[in-house]
Image 1 (cartoon, rainbow, N blue to C red):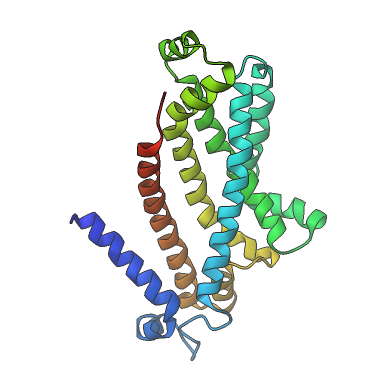
Image 2: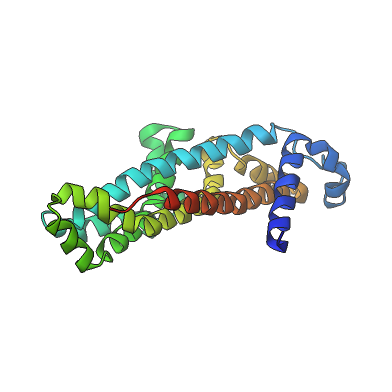
Length: 245
């Protein structure tokens, strides 16, 4: 067992232990408080907040994946190549405007809560998936595509059975990048009343409680790292199971 594996296992154990039994870590965070402030966040359940944030991130990532991959396929087809500049401009909006700005625009339209956060994360997560989809599809060897056509495959069959499987490693890499980035970005959703670990960080900032800030940031960081590792493992297993005709 490698050191990295041991480190990941330790991080997972620590995260689960802290989320299920946070008050057991009181001695660890007590030195970071002053004037009798609570050392462990007590205005909500940490496990519930972590799961709510993770759910929001996964839902936004699923929506981003569907739209970005569909757009990537469209603009790499001869009939849709003319839409590439427009599509690239649209997906770049998420990176040009920070999520806070997207929240400011969407709150008046959809109200407070989960919806504006989902929209912000959806827009923010489009670019890496879109660009990786285009790169993956355009990098398919011409000889392989010609061979597929020579076997009598239609354009749709060639896409589904040859191009997408070959592009899948890059597509999955884009999804992974989008997912991990949004784990941290999702904390801003608490500014518009969305459930998440941002509540813990904001409570710490408002009360000058370093322990709360550290807890929110620590759980978010560990979730991002472990989610990255989990996705890499699932990605490898998925790619081994995908046949390429």
